[in-house]
Image (tube, rainbow, N blue to C red; front, side, top):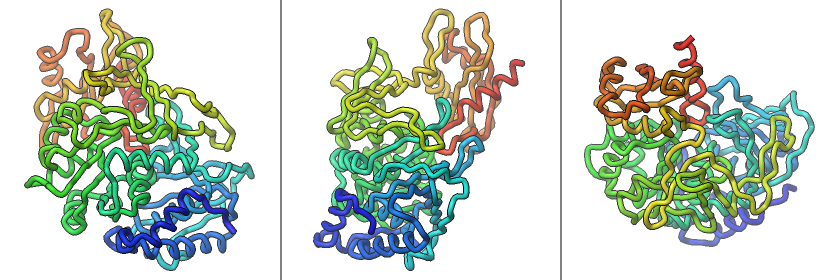
Length: 476
């Protein structure tokens, strides 16, 4: 018999006795189950795993779509204290899909019926399993690899629930909430910051797999969400479909890639002033955000103040590197074999690698990556400052600046990659000419390239190392 995680099991008990949550639902638009059905469905899922030979101490590699069936599997593993690695679809050949310490992999697709449990899961025994055990009750996630080699982050289930409780407090999740989840539950953002908080309070949840503008608008009309977690790319997508202001939302949270001021302003107007930037990481989960009632200026330009119990500090004067002390942070990093690379010391500060400063009133502004700054003509330049300014030019949807090997008379060589807005045509030489009126001389990019798309990591973030490698080819 599997040993249940008391924290999550107690939530299931509350579901079964709380009339406020009995009729609330978990849906993916194709299949819907009520909260009153969940305890029995999770029992069925646990039995189906046991019948496949999965033992309580096994660590599983889990690949699941945003579906009711996928959610049932994740909830079963959380409830029963099983360790598992969330494996997003591999789009980067450098990322190994299944770590060697996983005895089984389990896949759950979209559009599959949540019952019977044995039919919705594909369980595969891993021939390369190295026999190493992972402590029970752990969630494991890969870092994005955006600033170096990808590592496997270890989270305790109880800490995940504490992190989720902070999001409940910050964003006002409650049983009456209706939560749209168009971001992957295979990432910390979708799983830890929205899905688990909604589960904690018994709110209705609408899971959307690989959403598009038509799918989201249709689900929005039928489900009438009050809370949604999105990315800047989803905001941009919805701006193409929104023709009137949405008043049903209490809050929409964005995170991940930097959102431009222009897009934040336009989208915030369409949802009646309810957009919030959340700051966090795979290691720390949700760390800081504004409150829904904060002013536009705070919500657009800062990450607000830290979550409950979280401390932030800026090292070595301002701007300086942002550090985090989090009561629900990670346990450390594993390598692909299951050996510890680093075990986090209790009470230790986590270095984010981001440059930040404190604004009037105590809110924090994140200026960019500490590793994404260079010196030219004796000036410190943040690459994200160049990106923000260049995105003000007409017909440009996104700018990413990368550093190339070699140098010029001014200092390190930089190049800008510009993505045009839909239907627009960009000219690289014209863009660089306009930069002379927009940027100081020491910040001018040495090269400008027009790109219809940018290389992405499995996390959806821009692969800046790939862009730097592309720049290196142009200067050889």
